[in-house]
Image (tube, rainbow, N blue to C red):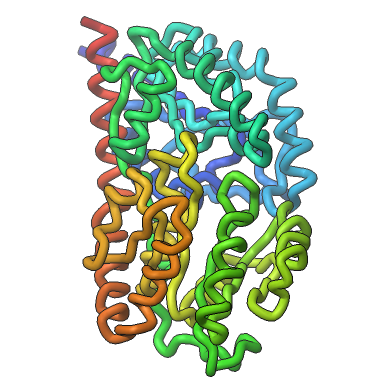
Length: 407
């Protein structure tokens, strides 16, 4: 009896390049998952260290953290990319560390190219997170790049067809995308990505447009997040040039920026839209972004109709819904699993500029009805992206995979 009681708990390795302090914000179910696993498992988190040694001991109480011998400042884009290269250089040592830990299950939350396949090849039951398609992110600015990205992603996904692998997706549409890339349907588990409650939320009172330097007589539609070509900002600006001819009082507000801000300003100037588009530039905190969103007439969630976008739920979708402002979104299959047109948001036909403008007109023509739909959207976000539910689903998947490996 005593020997059984002292038997070590089976380990679950959680692999991510960012430390738990960052991951707990990016994937808000981490804290709940650690607590859910704690009674039966030892959770071992493997990552870089936090910038300046800023560790949250309360968060780490339910896990053991193994840090690589360098830290990352995620707020510094140059440091983030440089440390990602160092992370790659340490891949061999990281995999050796996992091998030595002999985990019951590995949760590979790092979807950087080639890494999930190499983790799965270790032979341990592995859960692969597929939220980011990095080849599309890196190469999606160009038509030839999107084709090359698709080939590289197919090669990676096919390497996951192992008895011990499950890939988590946020939508059924994303599961179909994985199947199209070559993953067996039995390898897919649908778990909606959790939201970070309380950061993006309705503000009472909402900031006035005057406070933000905007003309209150204009109608403002905001798009926000990191700017990159694959999201279709160029397509959106083409549509906007047509929209403001019909509606000269409309203004597009581009919130945020990061690496693509200069490119976006050039695209705006190229189309002569300087008076019709306002760019905030990079905002230092998500609370600042939330203030801007709360002052908008509607929030836009735009993605072009490309294979890499078919199944995704952009973070901008659930963050936008959580503000309680009306959300106008591309009616791609994954997004349409969450947003029900006319009930908790507005959908337009992907790649269709006329449908986009018509959706905005629906918001403007019935502001009271749009406000009701906006409030319904915040309830929908809370329902679909609950961190506790995501944590329980992951715990159940861990237990099922462990049981399957032992049978």
